[in-house]
Image (cartoon, rainbow, N blue to C red):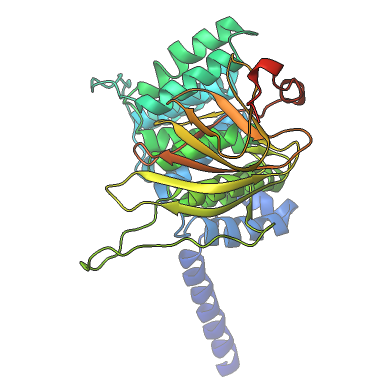
Length: 410
């Protein structure tokens, strides 16, 4: 009897311990998952909901926004309801859920958005959430210089081929949707970036990752979005976003202003030493064609806004099309180069020449096809922004070269 009693007691203790463990680590995966794919059950409970969701990189509210955005944009209708509930529990308001769906109608298509509405409506009915109304807050004002550059890009790159698409992009997408106060700019950027990664559109990511960081997302949070999405859209989609994010981070680091000294001591002269010949940082492939080396990066201390760098182009290398909010000055140090503003001729430049590019003028510059060129570039920042990068210069446009009348005498 004593042995039986001891066995019963041990079994009871074991059951109690198991119950306590279950309460500490409740299962999220349905029982059928463990019956069919126990490994999936383990990864669901121990990794996805045991490590990723509690992770500190993203707040639970942000993880819900990213998850719902991924499910909506990829048409995973069956999973939307459970994550809409979790989003509400994590602090996302009903109005924000509705605006998330509205945003993603433009970025993943109306069918996905309408399907999501049906699933979220079931959750609203279940929780007795009434109809959602548009916010009566004032429309948001977008940053003027960035909008001017974006509009110019659309007018130059889209309007000649698809004028209706260009008009809708400027008037509806950015003139209306992005100005709605129903979702904070940071959250609107967050769900847009998440959707682009989830549906495998990394070519659209640089613009929106930069906008997300301008709207308040940290570098760690942007990287955390990719890690979270790996579980909901698959590793290939997340990994495809990594090289794009690397280029965005590198570009922002290169443009970041030098912090002023913390002490109150008088400012000192600062010398940025020249890099040895052939050295320097490679120009980001997203913004340059051919071999380009950047060295001598500097940025003036506030309140100064000036900054610059020495850029060395190998033969055939050039920048992508771009603009500067406050213009740019180029001093040609060596070699022979070409420069062109949109709609103008390709002009040749040589050592000692100084080139001034006015604010918001689309242009490119680089070496000639058969000779290297080095220039020193100077520009001022407006609200922290120095340059807006656009599409690359085609080989056809580049090789058109300058007309004889445009060549600098020498």
